[in-house]
Image (tube, rainbow, N blue to C red; front, side, top):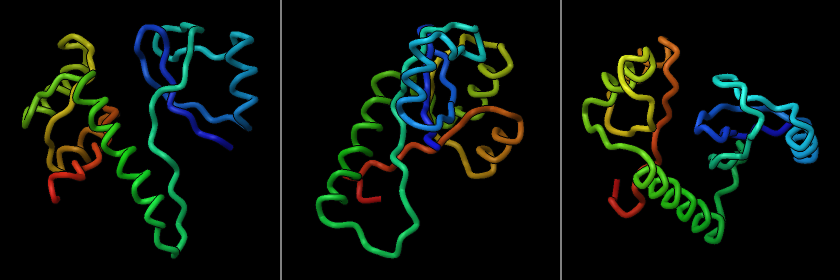
Length: 136
């Protein structure tokens, strides 16, 4: 099975599981994929994190460089395509989730407890990879 992060032409993001890459392509071409938010059939793969296996081998230098490049690209993508809301992230995410403010992509800071509460409420959240150049 393959999990893909998907996005419709209206910007709604959701996940889909497929038997193979070819199965995704076939369902997409046939109009069998629909957005759960708006029922659009114009679906594409969205940016997603790579699957990381649970092996005990350490990554080769090339693999480490590739992972660092991916994390940097993901951070840059989010920073360019989402609104930074700083420490008000949890409050703003709730407002968006409950329709109290305009739906849009945001990023900011939240405590572990705030993130846990958001997840329990059904708010979609995910941690942003650390900035590899920050030393954290």
